[in-house]
Length: 301
Image 1 (cartoon, helix red, strand yellow):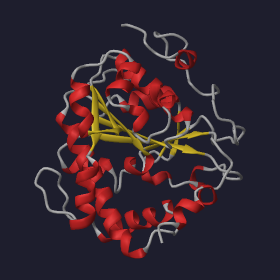
Image 2 (tube, one colour):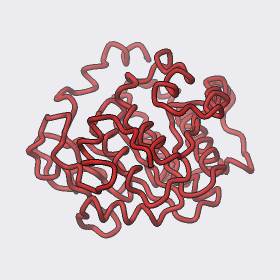
Image 3 (cartoon, one colour):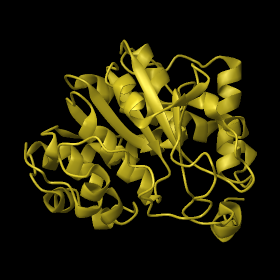
Image 4 (cartoon, helix red, strand yellow):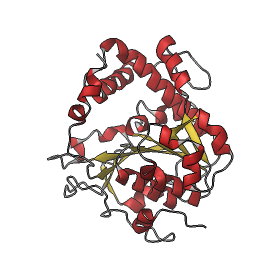
């Protein structure tokens, strides 16, 4: 197997052959002394697992959804570590790549920079490619096809205008009332209460469509598959895992990479029930995102 991984990931892996724990090699540092940092919580078993135990559990899944905070480099290092150590990887799909990128990806770029160039990453609006490079490197190292999971912006605009339509492929049947409420509450929370109430339902429709579309793209691939996506999309109750199950995936497991918070040192201090497994990491910034992005959020009103 060729070893294409970036140097920082190699430091985590201690070479292409081992399965050294990635814990302790953090790029971020806020609250790194929180006792949860580097630990993995199993929601169903109600206990902690070691990183190796996590990899072994994920190896049993048809699809693994790895949910991140997009700008936290440690989340991407851990995603790369998992991809590298899974027993088999049939394909790696990315929320950050949309259907318009698919033709370029079909040409089979063989280096991370070739991927970045093929999909015009610098113009995409996603965080700098260096953050995602370890994940792409791990996929290439495993000779796994890189897939575009995201629908085009045009499709999402249509859903926002016209609402959802039942689709036998996407399985967009209505959510249970408690699921719909959970999704709409998350939209209010992630927009810090600034989303106009009249926009919450259309935004929920767009998110549901996006999650179902990503599930369908993943289902099309062969072998054990991995999806890289934001943590909200990795929720097992209302995110991509729900639609993967609806669309026929037999065993789906989700991992939420979660930044710890000050004074919160127990799993129950976090919404661990949203994922099959939660991997706790330090914080990138000790800043309230609602304050950081207040100016942009206020423009939603």
